[in-house]
Length: 70
Image (tube, rainbow, N blue to C red):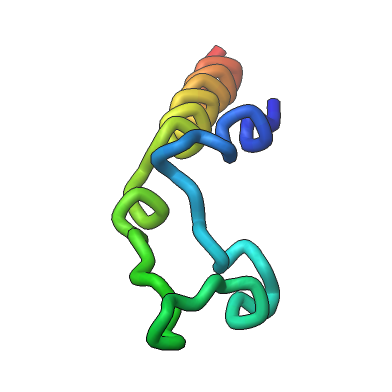
């Protein structure tokens, strides 16, 4: 189950320009020519995608472990 697409556009978890292979080409520059600061806190911290992945992994792990024990 790939739930990445469903949650990748969450408003607090955007990767900013770093989704592009060349982020310097798409970064909008300020009046002084410098790129805006990036908020990587939400990108680096776990979010809904990570939580779903952990839950699904735990379900699979338990099913596999239960099947081997019997």
